[in-house]
Image (cartoon, rainbow, N blue to C red; front, side, top):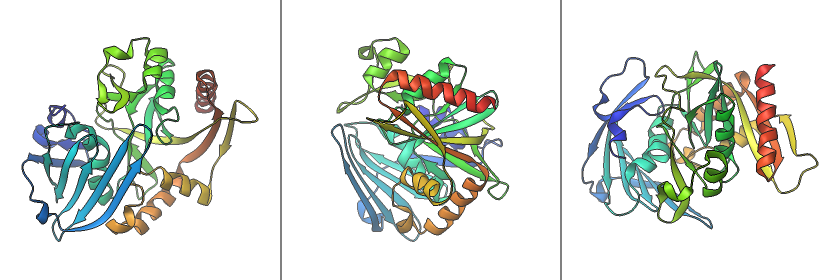
Amino acid sequence: MLKDFYSMPLHGVACGALGSKKSLPYNLSLNFDSIIEGTLGDKIWSLVDKGERYRTELNLFRSATSCSLQVNCEGHGVFKFTGNQLTIDWQKLGTGSAHYFQTVGLAVWLELNQVLCIHGNALEYKGQTIGLVAPSGTGKSTLSAKLCESGFSWMTDDMMALHPENNGEQFRVYPSWPIARMWPDSVESELKVSHESLEKVHDGFSKRVVNLQGQISTSNSGQVLKTIYILNRVTDAKTSCEVKTVTGSRALILLLQNSILGDAYTALGIEINRIATLSKLLDNISVKEITYCNGSHNLNIVRKYILEDLAR
């Protein structure tokens, strides 16, 4: 996937050999080279997250001139940002750097440039852009695939980069790379193909890489976000789908909980400005929490609600 660094923009950022793209807000030059660990500066933040299917270790370093993210997961390496220059030092064995760059790697740089990076998918429908926000394993990608059957276009997978415009009165979303990561059962049920025919995200993870060519928005100008739907999957609920508009501190907490870099913002020195930007977002964008039970048939009900909500 190294070719992806150069072949297309990502979340509103022109990378590598793409050069200047006037329709995109940012340009980031890339360099693949060795990085001496002692030059990273002071460690300011660490995250170790373990689950049944994964182990993630991230470390942030800060020096007078750079900010670096060290990744120790199925892939191992460092993203070092110095201004608009990114140096990548990555081990050959394991998952490649592109997998991490499209989310946590680029999120560091975007957040430092006051772009909110939220754990979610973005989709476009008849000129309206929505976000599906939730932790991994709660049905974002499966629901996204169902919505695409109903005329939606996939914009981003796993991360939404929200670019503030007009002093935070609106937020623009730009497409990610045309790939998604889906669990094998979702591949089989929604895409109607054998999951064995698709590449694994990495060896220790059963998620598959799905090519979205022809299904993802290719607009370099991006789309203005209208609504965020917070997905809350439960094992037991009074109804198969319950929808509530979320406002105030609860909405803010939900978005903070679903931020790509977790609690790294205090260490980066951007927490106060970030909360102010999130507050402006909540003043201008509707946030709705959808609580639903396990089961693909309940995702069909969620899809029906979203279609009806956008038609109002």
